[in-house]
Image 1 (cartoon, rainbow, N blue to C red):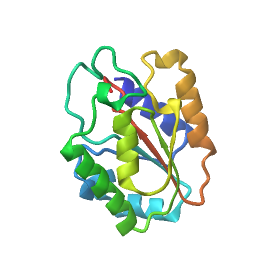
Image 2: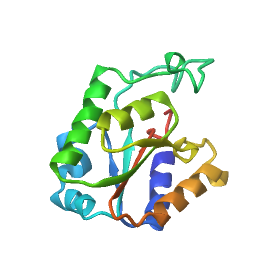
Image 3: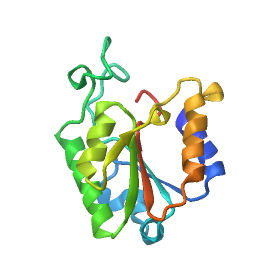
Image 4: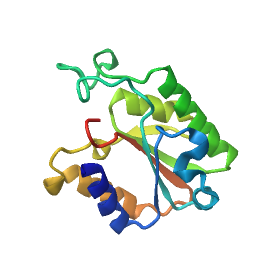
Length: 165
């Protein structure tokens, strides 16, 4: 599975990468582990987050979608927007300091990052899944971003599920 392989490769580069899935209720994000939240509070860590719920279809985006036109993309639904807000609230209630937020340029990722409301959002193509990870310039760039992060706070990365986006 591509997702497992990419996370394994990132995990080799940085042992303190914490993956949080919005498909879980935010209260149990990162396994609701006190250790995971404590690590994020301490800073110097990376939180890898999948965008909130976006109704399935097309195995990704509709044919002919445009990256600069959200109306042509598969976007968050009300559940996804609620998940993003709740996760942002979980970060705040746990006292997690976020120093940087990077998002895939797809609208569902940007909206998730913005609704979390934990910091200003920058876009990065390094967070766009590459269908050929063995030759991925984006994966190499993502590994460099993650490996270079030292904090003092947390780096939040908002991306896709890496299989069908």
